[in-house]
Length: 246
Ligand SMILES: *Cc1c(COP(=O)(O)O)cnc(C)c1O
Figure (tube, rainbow, N blue to C red):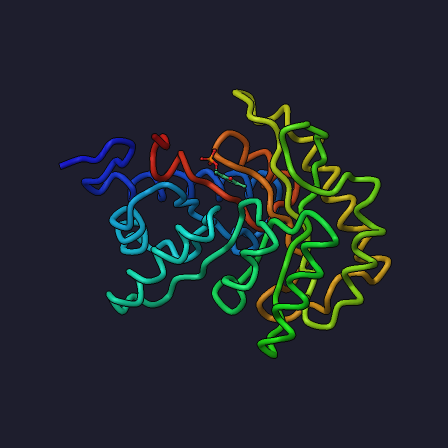
């Protein structure tokens, strides 16, 4: 039985390998080591069976957009005793939901305001935790997108760098949807340049084994190869792996 929008029947594994092959090809073209690029399988609005199939095919990093959906999936994960999943929060986050995330994800990509970073600080401090985050930047300036405006990103990073229970690991952006990924390269380049400026200014947390370089989370189904060519270290791919969302 196929559910709408869920390929099933081993297709997810094939899709994963196809994306991985394209990432490797883009890395070769850019003279990069494919190990620098983490593929995050974006499983929002997809059933647990899709995650199970992707996990069986080797995916380990999963991205979710909604706190409640993440919690439901983590509950199933626990009941099945499945380990080895790294959860990434990539969707717009309301302040009152932050407390549910502390200690439950490896990285919150979608910190789009100082107020939200301060909430992560407060909830992390309560639990004696340190939470890794990215700053989301709206480099394309789309009205519909969340994120810091590029001109506010460095001053925002300076504020966030002061928070003791938050570690700023890098940057995230979503470029416009496009049929031609190449057209988004200028946006990806801008995010990389911003990251370089922040690193020079000493605004990013010290690098360690988990994050040897600043994280650049950019590139989705329509443009992940272009993002890799511009230095993405994490790409967030949903549709190309799991099929269209209903
Ligand atoms: C849904 C989503 C993705 C994945 O998009 P696809 O086009 O399905 O690959 C990536 N990043 C964010 C922030 C998303 O919300």
